[in-house]
Length: 270
Image (cartoon, rainbow, N blue to C red; front, side):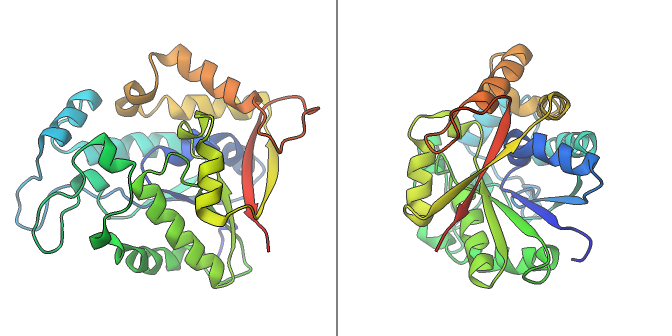
């Protein structure tokens, strides 16, 4: 990895656009090359040629109005969103947690919403080293750029695994900052819980002011993820309203006198 000074790690095909789309558009407009690497973007057909299935997967696919090849649909949505934001992108082949199987039994591991936001299954701890190995070619050598990781607000298992890989890069000398996972970060206690889980109280906040055109581009990009909108929003109007409201909100460490929308990132301190 050479030309990218900004590498965003997105657990799923929408997380970075929802959380950082305004800043990414801003950087791209300023001529800064940006790469978004979506980690859990693989297709769900397993090596035997069949299709993984469960009642939970079926319900999600129905909500998304997607057929059995939902990841292909979602990758196309992400491509459209990234082109709108002006970012380069890469989709890694790891499966979304709803499709992952126990390495010994072959059983699907995560079978409900409750499973998705609980602890990572012990059988999956080996994934962190694999993620780090796959991501290494994109993040380059320490000191040459910034890695942007989710904070794991909401505690989704795939976000937890992405954070673990990012922390390994930080330990190796890379500059890593953590973004607020939207819309999970809307919950009153989500950010505080995530910060405590990742790094205790060792945090410094950075505000990233957005222009009107940055927020407009972010909203337009989020609207490209048609399959996912019904999970979080009632309609397109609510998308714009809530993105604006969150950009105007203040965390306890934010400057109360600021004006205008922003996104926030967090730095682990010594």
